[in-house]
Length: 227
Image (cartoon, rainbow, N blue to C red; front, side, top):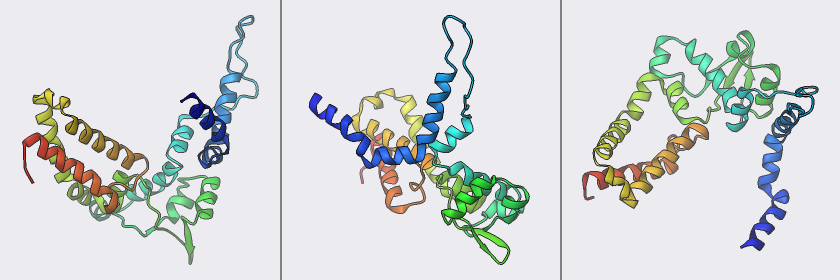
């Protein structure tokens, strides 16, 4: 066991996972480490060494953890907030014109704009700026793209079922002793969490199928339904 663990530690710096972490988060991690070391208090002088420190904001950490999804979310949120009441009810759709949000209101800075253009998320055609890129935070994508009514239609039945299940579990805590029930609860919580941090769960039929399967099985186990 120890040999396997040591081997994994030695191999990790050469793995694709390490390279991805280094490429996406290396600079941020280095800044955090430097910031911690610069802010250490000298035991003799009791003076903090803040020279050359480069503080890291909470927004930067959240943006990094969510793989820059918050940058794009700010643009679409601004577009949704400035849209008509009809668009708020029925959604702004998937092909969105965002020139005002980028250039007039300057929702994002020049570096972020350059990054989105480089990735091909923003296309300029005849003095208009369009994007079809989703935020990849499923709950927000559904709200902004399909509107308030679409969001209600999308989630109403699911939320109703979850509330019925939660009520029953609260009344009978012994359900937590049932392994099948616990596994289904974990599946649902993980799926919803991943949907809001990485996306491609609620809006992807092939993946959403497993969430629905776990929900149906949990409902059947709680209410003793036989399918």
